[in-house]
Image (cartoon, rainbow, N blue to C red):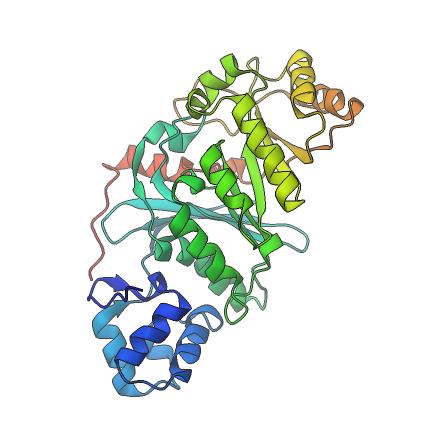
Length: 362
């Protein structure tokens, strides 16, 4: 077990056991770990000074060795209906990522990024257009929903759901993402139920198989977008490595091993994948799979040639699936006026600057 203790280390990179080990090295009582964990993940402290029941000497020592929050908000956008709030965060190395909170009747859902950019490179996605830079560390992932949880706390509300569907391919950064999941789920802290956490993948088969073996009952969403390999190769380049036959085999194994339903994400793109014929191919592909299809009229991106399907074609596509007994809904579009699709705020920021912000101070 490694314990981070350099001035640039982030306290949220530590698991609870690692935090206990660090405090033991410092000869602190065992209960200090629980106190510190509670300050970070229940009280949502923004700095060590707020941790009033910790001794002054310990607070000073923590501040010398660790930073608490790796994220600095540098830009934000709020939709006209006030139900979608998107934030661009600067990371310690000057890179940036974004996350978004969406409000529904009873749900407060935060969409989290897992990488700076994305290695999959889908042409209709703003993140894919920006290229891949690096994986996020555990703290950089964990801290994103905490930012919004602090905002909700001021309104006497709580975060209810977390979806790792922002920038990046989560299952290609598995270790850091899974540490974040376990931290969010920990009953001593944020205590978000496992079934309220969903990981999204563009079809990274090794990650799906690894997720199948996990005990926590988190949700899985698979971004499909096409029902035959030729078109999916064009839309989702990862399909060339893991074609549909291999992907669907992994999905069936997942549902068999876990008993959990998969959400199939399908972005409807005008004149590309939105015909009734494509819907019928999709129904054939998914026949017998424990799944629910989430149809998503595309969020158009700056400089992209793809456009969202018109409403009539969305309805016809949905009807074709439902007539073949495929459970289907059309996702409620949120934040279109603020370009809330993943990577779009960062893309806008890059167009106005060089895309690399000054690093934060240690």
